[in-house]
Image (tube, rainbow, N blue to C red; front, side):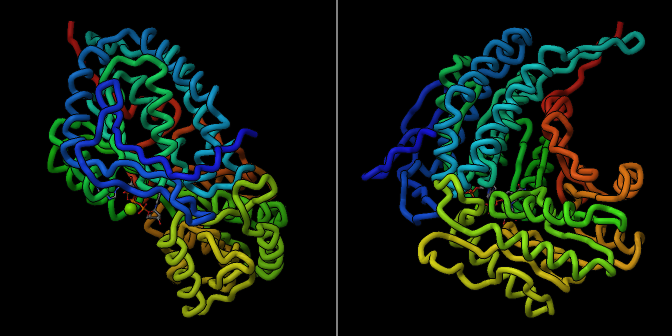
Length: 481
Ligand code: NAP
Ligand code: MG
């Protein structure tokens, strides 16, 4: 595994990728990028301004008509080179995400670097077989690109979230301005270099780094943006939807969740609980679709808590750059305080700490670490059962019967993902069909990057990935003959 070279002097980037090249940011301020394991500044990037956003949107608008009119086969050639660029730089992508997010190497390699490559590849296949027009009676219906896309992404799966928006948007014939999370701009810059190497026409893809309240807000509210695709917090998503509504823009929102993993009597309890703990601890619990609520029958409750506590203890926090580490830090100090605060709130509200806790992990004076935590005696009305924690914290909740389990599972503002385990797939699937959520894994079914991903209720609007993810960036035009 190729490692990032240790930098003596943090690299100070001052440019944005706009109109097919790197040009100086129009702002003078910069954003320091920290390594969450060492708390050291590893680089800085420009804090883009509204003027940078204006320039990027103008470049995207300028390129939109010609790019939108290219035959799909031509877009396919560019996207194939982009996919090959992602494949060629897997080690560099991994090293960058380990450094700026603190994601353990063993998870970053397949997920932070490998998954975006798989998603990019999936769009090569989808685009090659996609019908951009269909005949409906006396109408020919053409699926045309939505236009200029604003992509605003978070830091938890920084490259995956970029690829899941930018690649289908480009495949659809849209042009893009990307504003990545301020915590993880380095992998976004690396992505821009890969796009640059793939020879897309100038202005088709643009990158503006900056803070959300300035660059993000300017981009989301820009009158010349046609569609805003956002992944992040509910609070910001709500603002973006309101702004987009006022501007009659299309919007896609992916806003996280409080997903339930329901273990029905008759299921393989040990397997269901062990898989759940792995699901929550990976990426330090910073996963929007994480099963943060484990629902088990009251008769199996103490057994489940014991299995979960034992499994969680195997996630010893440590250096994400080490190959053995399974649990790294969380992304920043604010997030660490937030997560610890939730654990304290849970205890105040009557939960029992079965593993972990709010105290700093032993022997880790530096780095934004949180103990892998299992909370027992959690009831459906507690704060930790309702709000997204975004840390390595699992809440175990007891249910009386299947109806009660369903009521708890559906009893939050969210509806992004979930799991159901039962003696057989039919029983589990029947329960899953009654859950108000966008994705459910049956008896440990694997993640499928071709299946639509997105939320019911407060988890958002729209779908990413696969054919559904491409269709988000298209709009039908009907010609009658
Ligand atoms: P966030 O503020 O919503 O950040 C997401 C993206 O939106 C970032 O690029 C952010 O820029 C940008 N942004 C912030 N304010 C904006 C505004 N007014 N207009 C336009 N863009 C704006 O999320 P966060 O603060 O990083 O994380 C907070 C919580 O959100 C987490 O604890 C978690 O619960 C949830 N979250 C969910 C997901 C998910 O996958 N659904 C991902 C991350 C976080 P900056 O980076 O400069 O803030
Ligand atoms: Mg933020």
